[in-house]
Length: 543
Image 1 (cartoon, one colour):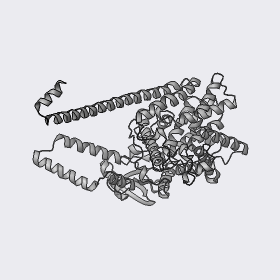
Image 2: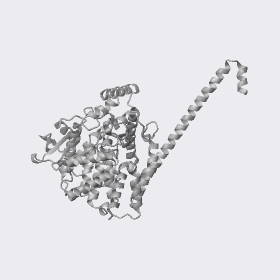
Image 3: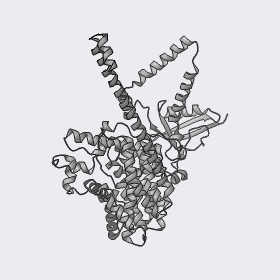
Image 4: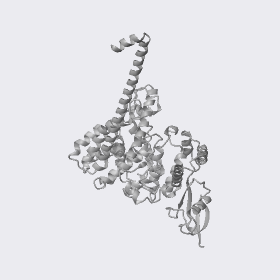
């Protein structure tokens, strides 16, 4: 029987595997798992000499010691990973104990029923399917070659309250290593096209993968070639950006990606490449990447509360004289990153080019301060009827409108993508209002968990902020009607219905409570009358 000989490395250690050509697939996977000293729940990835992921199967092409495959363990048993253990602990689960209990229950059912019920078989089938999915290299491939883009798990990152505000060194190093391993690999055309659409689902992608997708945006818009952005500078820049976004529920690195991805999608949808020059597009994309750097989860209203100068967070208000302290800080952190030679993506530009880009980025990021919303929108409205793409002032206002739209664009996404983001935002709002109450400060009304509900927070915002802004942009670019206006209108209908349902529920509860109180009151009257005898009760009833 023909024997296949496969040469590969594990952690830099050369290995050689032999197996028959008709060897079962599971045996081949077990062979490689053994070579990697991996556990039964660990996930393996095999790379060919070109860096592409290949399937571990009997179909592997034989090779030579000079063209070794590379085998890696890319994920470990959930019990050995800090987050997995933390997740289990936080939820109050002892996974080992739970498994024993399930085995005991299965034996008990078999003993009492005489046979295993069909429902147990179905549950075991689902568990096996889930385990196979977790262990499948193809499904987890970030390249998108095998990732099922229609299948999603819409979960915000868990336990922000249990994590340090700033990312730890270990956390950053793990993500950086993954990113650098992936950064030179090819992203599938399907993912490239999907990345240009407002329907893109951020919840499928890890932070390292997100950095690769951001890299794709700079490459596909020809920024790397046009501005001579070297790959190592771009990678260092994206990593530093990732590092300087904090572990908070909403204004985190994934939010940075969503805003940038929407900006990227708008550039393609409106064909801005034919209407604006590359420098202006570079300003908009980079502004989106940097627009919330080092956000701590507290808004400008909190920063400028009087009498709080001893609070470290309000050093920003002192530094920037209460004028857009957060947005000024985001700009400052962006240019701190760009001051470093290794992360300066503009290091090959002329002084004039850099000056123009710096001015544009500052203007765009400061435009994300919502206290300036009406001024910017009204200015855009005033020039809309005579908008001129050769007029720099007109384009400057458009750039500010585009980053504003991108910044608050979650409701333009599919509901299953957008709603988890609303949960994250409300969590951040509630955190701030809780702190304000503890410190005896005026509570920001739209953040008060005792007054704000999910639907009430959205209906007013969509009706009076989102739609007016989006509609004006669509007046300049009618093609956006179906892409961003229609989904926002559907979101408004959704939350309006939710608000009505909540009101009905509150009314029913109030009526039920009133009815209970009335019965208790009537009962007290009857008891009181009974003490004076039947005649007295009869008299009261007649009256």
